[in-house]
Length: 592
Image (cartoon, rainbow, N blue to C red; front, side, top):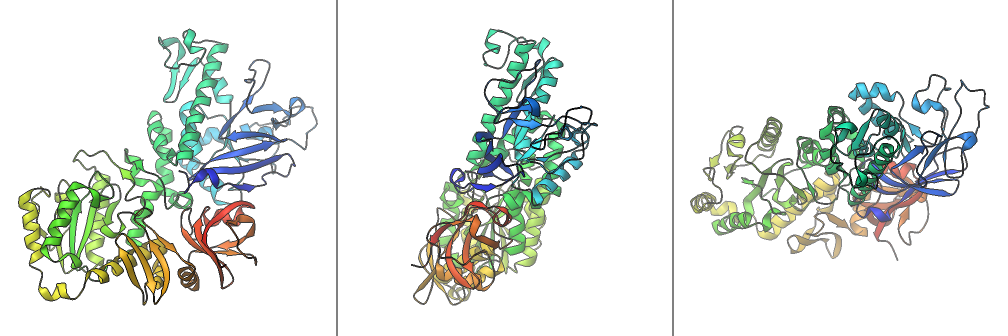
């Protein structure tokens, strides 16, 4: 899903001074979105192509059309005549010819769309393209439909939608036809060299298309790709489709890498904190915005549970959460039988996340990623793991470090100073498990006696609270205890429940009392106008929001210091401030 449940989390913005254009976002997946673009009362689903309609290249009978203003009909995107024309300018046009870089266009007016300018130049310089995406998605026009002209060939549609563009034109499809190119989702082929059309559209069933039929195929291929793009957005998995499509063109690979490495902030702002399972199957997966956020939060927010003075480094498993896998059940059995379980801190070493503390193994994306396993680590993976393990051992002040690893053993052990290797590279063997149990059993009785299972569960829950809410999350644990069986525990202070950790969600769900504590620290709040909350909170009533709020976060809804509700954010903080309509917070508790 694109957010927690994208199909039911719309928000709306008026995007044009003209009275006849509205845009409503129905579903989000990062910067990408499915929207309803309404022109003259006619609604079009986006991302979409606006088909240029001329005597030589008539647009398909259905769908959105791009027409000169004097010929436009209801529901069309209207383009004004250029300055070269003698026709008078129509003030009700949606676009100037500027959108294609016409030298006869007037300076870009305030219009119905945010338009990517200098498209040809940005095709030659990926950095300027990435910079433009950041600019478009960082300002007050975030919720205005974004238009990208002249470059949206079929194999680029997924990437351009991922960048947040909602509307394209058919100009590149026409140009490709003129050049005899047969378009596919993996690139353009010379039509005269295609023996068997790989497409099953109507024209391709009759053989290799040419002329007008070639354009019909190219249009059909583009429409099919957009249907697939919208499906992946709805499932919250567009990034996976993009990583497969960009292989066809260096420009796209450059673009996504620059967006990840130099414009992480704008992507992370719109990446939900709770998403759907995904495959991290390429080099680019290492820098997905949700994965980069995980690694940065570990190093910025995480602190080990206080009693866990012995660090135990473990390999990951194919099954998630790891503790349900056969290998980790054996590891945990050895830990339990050693008698030292309450002071052992299990830390899973994995790519692309780097490190996953056992208590965070159910927090997205730790329980939701899958990777191809070959036993070979590339240079970026090695450096990432080395940096994180070095940070861990230098900042968390462990008394003892035990390495019980497999294929990553040499990589990790190379950055450890004082440690014991218990696995010999075979962590699942009987001998290595016996060595692990024996090493842990050497812990003194006094060390073990200083803590118990309930105290350890409290500390583990506190680590999650700090990871989820930042340093302010520690307020939830002050003077509290936990009830229940891990991972389903309640945070209780006196007789008042502050929150609930559930294994299915992997996050702490706040109560009104817990929300009040968090609000007192000015963290993860949504500020609303003065009204009683009797259902979900909509953007029209939101005045402000804490900058850290992301889609899927637990938040407290308040007016001044008066807590009105708690629930799950359906928009990021920046969207809540800009949107005029749509669900901002799906409430869980509100005063009766």
